[in-house]
Amino acid sequence: MTHLNKLKMAALLFSLAALMTLTACGSGETENAGESVTLTVSAAASLTDALEEAAALFSEEHPDIKVDFNFGGSGALQQQISQGAPADIFFSASKNDFDALIESGSIAKEQSVNLLQNELVLVTPADNQAVTSFDNIQEASQIAVGTPESVPAGKYSMETFESFGITADVEPLLVYAEDVRAVLTYVERDEVDAGLVYRTDALTSDSVEIADTAPKGAHDPIVYPVGIIKKSDNAEAAEIFYDFLQTEDTLAVFEEYGFTVE
Image (cartoon, rainbow, N blue to C red):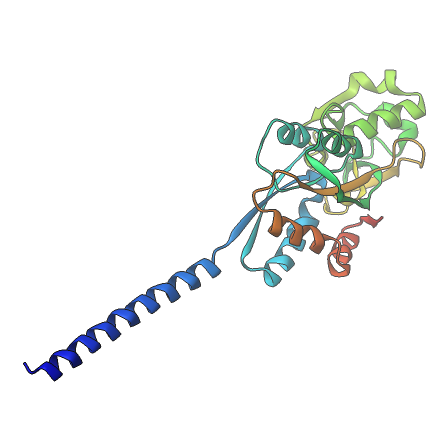
């Protein structure tokens, strides 16, 4: 092989090596750019349907951000977060439970907002008319409510009974549930004569009827605050979803499910 041919061969090998290096780098950049982020959103059970629809809209705009929900009673969720359970966003049905996380430093007040409101209603099975209003709720054989210590709807229920002066009468009739959706299920299955849930929950079921609405002042205002957890491992994505929840299109979804926008 002549000296000239050796030089040509060396140049060719160098070019091939450089091309392979660039290709590898390019592949790495594409793979990193396509990495998805998974957000964990701890949210009140009463938000289930509305949030799942909102998340579907969100995924269309942000396919690289997956949203996983941890639905439950707000008090139980607050305890989980306080004890270090992973979460990026907390969407509560209880301002007290939410404020507890602000006070402990888990949520920054400037990264939170009171977003929605709701109503407490008395529901009965569609084919069971043993109870027709709060006026004759004592005629029920059993009444389902959320556990007051961990379920805001349960706390609001007890406040309502107290405002009517019927707590002593109804306490022996109460069946406690782990969250407001469990209360709804008891009523849907006709396992109880009545239950107290949020209006938004009642509207999702064809198996229950709204017999009455708790009057204003019968319980604390039902406010839904949402905020970003300070220790979120996905702060940037959490902020994107947090902002998305406050857009007009998303708020319209909540309104369709019966929530009132703050």
